[in-house]
Length: 151
Image (cartoon, rainbow, N blue to C red; front, side):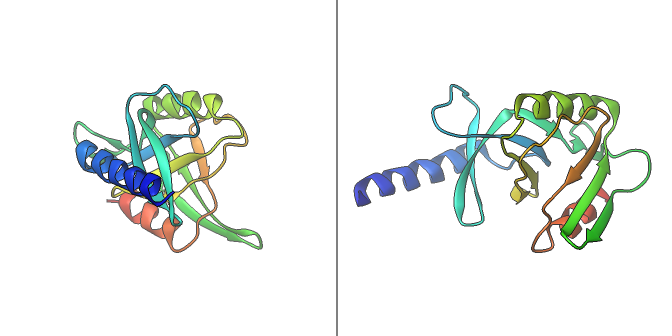
């Protein structure tokens, strides 16, 4: 068992190093046996999370590193059940987010900023209008994402 865990840890480290930093975006989380070839592993809440780098919606325009947020500023909202962040994406990012959420109903996705998973919500419905609601936002993750998107 220890030998298997060591091999998994070494493969995880090699995979992370091989693929470099992830672009800020929303990524598909893969579980179990997957046929995806563009996988990276990142830590979230003390666990390894497998992300598909080919199946994601960017939060920045990689050509000029400008945020893809439109229609006002992203907002952090707080209520009795916790905090969430509301983001309006530009049309091209909105379409990619719609495709991603459609293929991941009742499955997790991961919001990555600065090569770190800030949130890993479960998709409850397809986001068709580009208005993403990131929840839960714990440990200042909403504020971190808001700062990154406001640059």
